[in-house]
Image 1: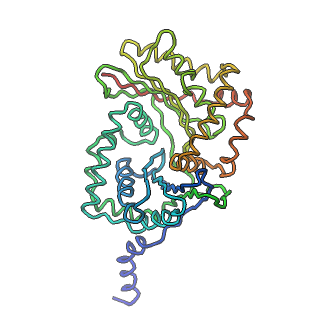
Image 2: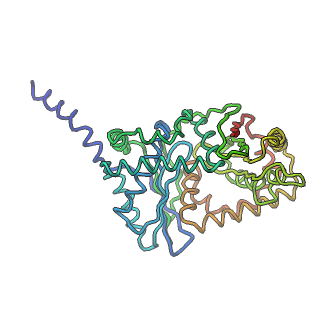
Image 3: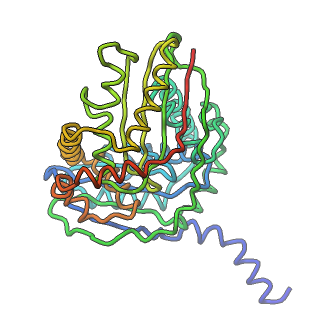
Length: 383
């Protein structure tokens, strides 16, 4: 064996170790925290190529390990259409410790027997918890279909089949995934650059209807779900127009003089691949055809710009109120602003929303509604 061949073989042997110890290159953004007593940190990792059960297990494993580096932090996992991450908060003077904790966790995550067992068990319990929540359960059916993942990923036994070797393999490949780190600190210098991440390769897929067993024995649960354009101001108003309180158009149709549904929710939220729009209702099986007709009619009316000036102005006010509510919670603020950045928006645009929301005209909003997609995924859970 020549010296060059010997050195090449050593490089092959130690390549995984160098990849594992390579410091992750975070795309870091800083924004001012609106609560002077707390600071927040949000981590997002693109993972559109991994099975959803793997994303669940990895993220919940990170959550349980964060206490090793920052015991006082409050940390929650979060998942979106093409990735996952952690959102955490701590006292304002401890934000540097929290930032370093996330970076240390990223670089020194240890998947020993106990950590693997706990992460898998928590992922299985998370799926069981979603199964008892009809809205979350149907939303993830629609999302997985759009992500071209099999619905078997929602089986609570899937995380239990993941081995520690697979978790280590995925962890070693994390530095190449271009993670994003958002820091919310009082009196921070604001980052005002767009996110420059590799293009998102997710190609959304829609189906006409998905049938699944109902988590409740006597009710039907129905969801209509689609992805709109990345127009956050108009999207926030649309979410409040449909589902903002008891005056939302969808809630009014479901809970009017002759109620059709026991529960009715509607909303819009920004994701890295577009705006997630949904209508949800829980009703008796006999009322399901009427609920379906009302959903189809409401979406058709929106595409034709049929809404009153009074409803539009009310939705504008509620969208501003919802924005203020997000700012008060460092964790919700972090996940919302991270999705905003991943959608190609700037930090300054987020902070200027109180000035931009009132300037949205009814005509501009109608043009946004006219561009709503005709392809909608319907998910029905029947007893």
